[in-house]
Image (cartoon, rainbow, N blue to C red; front, side, top):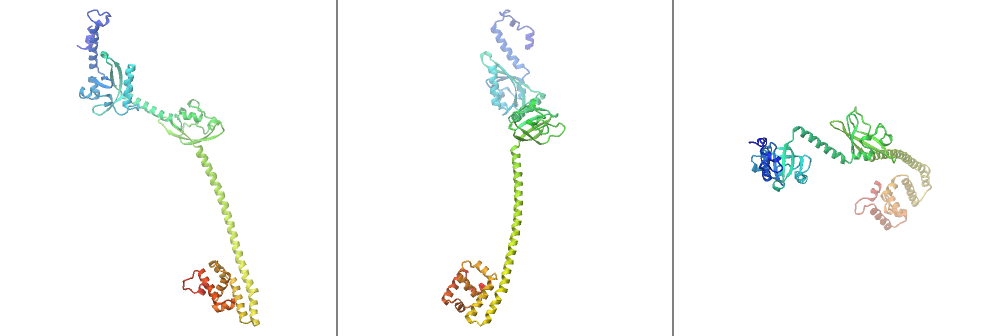
Length: 423
């Protein structure tokens, strides 16, 4: 006889008699209720479990079938965590979630939630769980019933989880964000949007020139006919300060997500860079102009120098050297003739680049050494130099050695006259 037959035939009719007529006593009633709870538990088509704390102590055949467990002995003694993945659909760990649900069931009498289990053959299943606190014989226990979540609800749950994750991200994002539908209407704005623009989804303006930068560029102006594209706009705050924003649209299955990035500092830096480039270009043009002018001046100075040198050479050749030739005709003695030769030679040197080159190589030569070097270059012997300069041979040789040292010819077998002629 089934439980249904027993109830139908009135076996428990005595339960309606408050004073225990028809031969039933209250203790007998409690015992029969306990027995029939066990019968219902075993025969229920819903997977059912009994837990002491968080340990399985009993289950029915439907529970074994749900978890694909070969024998009850393999399940008894396990904890729900032993047949659960690391994380649950809401993102929390299975350990944290199970402790919370058991505590809620014990404190509030019952709780219902969705849970992922792992069957004994390794498959994940999503179930609807109801935990009910009971106390058979005064001992606190938990009666758990599991029902498989239909496929249709699983999609809804995933969508809801995705929506919650999306909202959690944009709510905490440091950038202003807004969700715009396909008709160009704002359907959501995050807190950062409200902080920056001073209004939320219910008050997005489309033509407030002061706060939004005009109807042609503010965040409230959205075209519903064009594909979302990046754009920039400028707004003026209450302190009359301009701010430039870049809008980056992200296409959604329905509408788009607009991300607003404040690029004011970048724009100011770009403007400063362009201004600096323009100033540098102007300065470069001025420097090129000055460089050209300096080149012209240097060319003119070089021309003047060449003309001055040519003029000196012409004057010496025309106004000085002819008189030296006339002096030779007046009957000079040997010493006078030698002095006249030296005078002529030095004049010719003055109008030649020799002395300039000698000065470059021998900037530290004394005036006396320069005269001796000039005579050596012209082929004069030591005796002739002594006669011309009225010096002793020892003094001439001393100066000759100094000249060799200053020219870097010491300890070198180089003819001094030939070296001087090569300069």
